Length: 432
Ligand code: URA
Image (cartoon, rainbow, N blue to C red; front, side):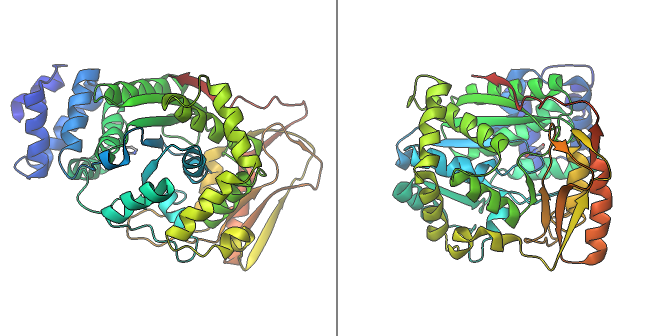
């Protein structure tokens, strides 16, 4: 291991045998944490070739269980977002794809940070079971075309161990390490078509376009080298996606979109990502054709029906889907009023996230509990005209202190200009 650390330190390229040695030693604990940490730091400085990243990813994927989805007949789709503020796209894309006849076997996670992950959001629906046995999970995809569950069993133990070490050694922020971590979980989850949504901006892991592009390309290359059908979109995370941030409240907004209501930006991104899924599954010839077909599924209510079916199958109380306002009923609501007039020219995603976190929408450690009903409703976003006294946003809180503090932070997230402001592009780049 000392030789391998030294090789990487000077920019050497590892062989497959060397990478397997490191990953096996990580999982069976024959390599001490301090050596793995030193190696991680060398990777941070020197990077990895696409081939090394692909080999690392495969080794990590094979370190635990691998899901076999052959019973679903191929063309099973998965999507992954690198995470952002207000990102509830999974809740919309999964029923959209399933209603188009593309099976989706979706594993999601709980979140660390400002809001919950998809699993936390789904658990805001009373009764919704996110922990499914493997045969039930696959059986549900066979029967209704989709299931969303948390990963149980022994998936990618190498990633778990490496991530723990990265977290405490300032080595999270490395493109090959992020890409291999994400893609190892995708390979283990067994889908054939993978659509990636790489976020770029203040509320994302990748703060600038160059970095986001590199991450997207690396993940796409890794997937292709393991015979996956890959595509990636780079989308903006300068301001939150959609109008709401929280857990239950994000389910509410997803239901709105599925009923052909709700904010345009969220709808645009969900239709675009799903249309790429359709294109890659050879169901349409162009992304535009896919968007058109999917839009019909929203208008006819078929995507909404599919979501209801998923919720019913997984034990969720459909009353909360039929009346989704119930998902963010809190004791207190605090409006944030504008003290001037103008146009919103900045709505800092990270500040909004911090304001939400104060309400208990997220967690710092895996063991922490979160609030399902608290959250933020943004009435004004970039480009919107604002009059003095207009309500910019409303905060749904369970405590007066938290609500007021959250409102103070949220006020700093907004910046107004006197001149009209152009709404920035949401979809920045597509790698097909
Ligand atoms: N998400 C992951 O799954 N892994 C990383 O390394 C970063 C984000």
